[in-house]
Length: 339
Picture 1 (cartoon, rainbow, N blue to C red):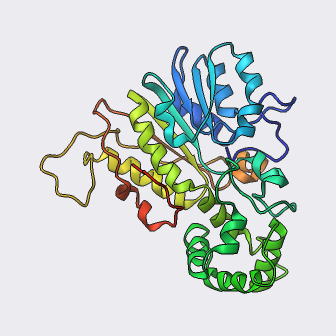
Picture 2: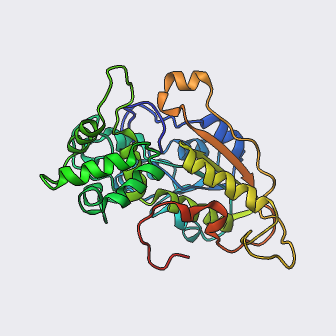
């Protein structure tokens, strides 16, 4: 989860309790009752999971980061059978439960714990290896910046990082890596600053969007999100609630399009002719919710958060169709056997 002020303790790891972004609003949207079952697809430090357990629900919590799963074992012991932790990708959330659930919550993005841990390489606030892998396997950020062509890097920085000087930065990195490959977070951050410069009055470091684009690409975050939305559709019972908290426009756009399309009755690709209109798979989604000023004053990382809610109908789950969320326009690592 990308929630909470810096310095929060992992679940069960200390006296401070992790308070995730929009907690009150998430609980209002999920409306948990005693005996309800939930999937927390992004366990993180366990903030949403703990609140759902306290409300009387049972939770299957998923995280692709083995560190988060290990830190959460104290919660499993505390809640005596009502919490199950699963190390997996949330795109497979429907595969880890035996029966339809009352609610699914997804908090998209990198967690505060990952940002604050220098060895993970998600941030250049402290020097660490240029890694960024949530699962600690596969292609690293260093692999990407040291081997990919400038044109491909420019697409990653420009589309996923929303960096306006993506081409200039990509060409500069290609030139600099020929002298010495990038190994650490500060290697890359300093190189970007050298390429584009930095005015004294600029509050945002020039490498910020480059790091965002790399992290999203390395972890295929947008592809995972899209697959998770379709998985939630399959996992929810009629009347079940899907709640998604996003932190930037790329994520929010995918969620908004998915909920609108699945509530529109198309049930399939909008690019194909429909012989007969299918029943809506979700009720018309509610308006998005943003954090209060009180919350952002306490937790500046919450500023860009958006919550969206959709309620499942009793129509059978539809086919997976990535066209409806616009996934094809985003640079993504090759994934074999994608459904």
